[in-house]
Length: 128
Ligand SMILES: [Cu+2]
Image (tube, rainbow, N blue to C red; front, side, top):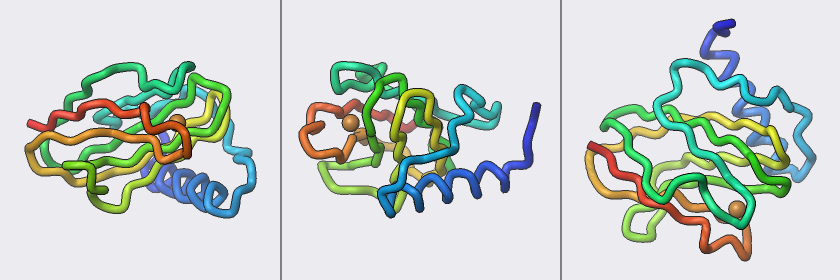
């Protein structure tokens, strides 16, 4: 089932808005990750991402963030501990999926969860 990408963007915006207002997301269509996604990142139990190193190709990088844990997690991109761009993905409960795009030149980055107490949720992101 391929859906038009604008619908995915709208769903992503809706999830972000709900995250901002603190409401729980009703957008619980689990594991429907579009084929267009460039990078898949999962939050797993133990306040971790599913990998310690992710790789992507320079340019527009579409990131799918999936919650395999039971609590809320976010994802931003850092370079030298400074946030890059405006991307902020949020997944509130198990099975949630949030998708966003960030434009990155080649370099070394990190993905990071901003939820208080989750400062160990950090993984390397190498963009080539
Ligand atoms: Cu987290």
